[in-house]
Length: 53
Image (tube, rainbow, N blue to C red; front, side):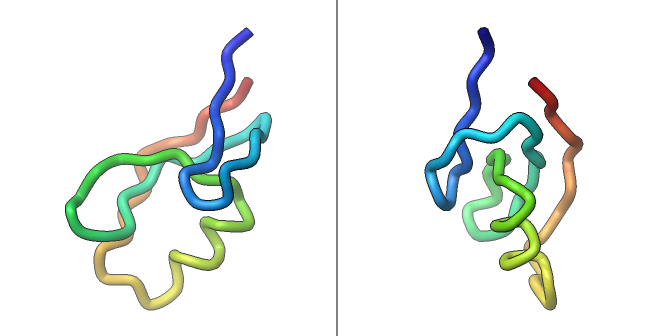
């Protein structure tokens, strides 16, 4: 079974979002809750797709 954990909170979710949100500009997977925290007014934010289990 494929598993992914949120880069920020460390919990496992069935749906994750691939984003860049800080320097250095590395792609990471985050949950929806953490996405909504880092997205507003973030000049580094870029969406890179949705991953589903």
